[in-house]
Image 1 (tube, one colour):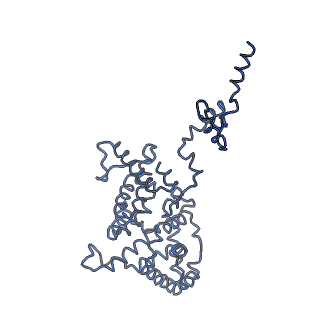
Image 2 (cartoon, rainbow, N blue to C red):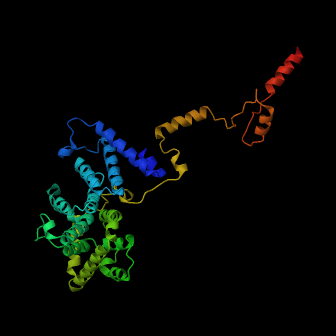
Length: 351
């Protein structure tokens, strides 16, 4: 029903249906299943667990659209903890929610500690989001910043690293945000930012996910200035030493070595802010169980529908009312009106 209301354009009812679905699923939990301890998992490979994942993911998006970014972040953490394989792609949503909720320090700690693996920064979303985290932390007063290590790389170095590793992101951001100033044209004319594809299916898909989800963050004017100045620094560095570009190309190919798109199950539309809808005629059979359509066809074949208009009774009615009603084009008194009465008169005549 949530999907039906969404495509019908009634997003409030859709959100309400998702909330009811989550309540029903929560009522079905085992008493020992406690999500707050972080040690309980549900594997999506079990068919009965899939509604929990789809409902939680939809709930995250609904909370985000309502501006409840901190709540959406907490639900996203829960979604990520339920299955270590991350079937819904929560990893590619959580950085965006952290930035919107201003949880900059938490995101840095998360990238360092997640699965004891420090390679999260290789993903496009984390490489750029970490630079934004550091950028905002540097802008805060030192007394308000907790647990900030002065030995960390600064925001400019992190963004340079992100642009060197994923230069295609800059072109996609300029198109999506959009950034229409003339200096962006000159920057994108550089050979390093010129290619339209990376040639790596998985990476191209992840870049599309990142740009579709996070482009709105780059609409902040001072972040655009930060991006422009850092892109110019990258160009200056490449003009001095071309080996840097080759080194980062090797890192990129080694990190995303598969020739197949390993993230094809994650749809770009699921990470989009745009709200899709469907025309009314496409919604007529939306909630019909496909297994019932064959049964309906058999019933219709055995009992073909009568396309005649329903007849109106005229017995014991005012003659004047019937006269005016008969002028209406949709009124039908039946083709056999009076036939039975005529037959009765014939029978009386025979006697």
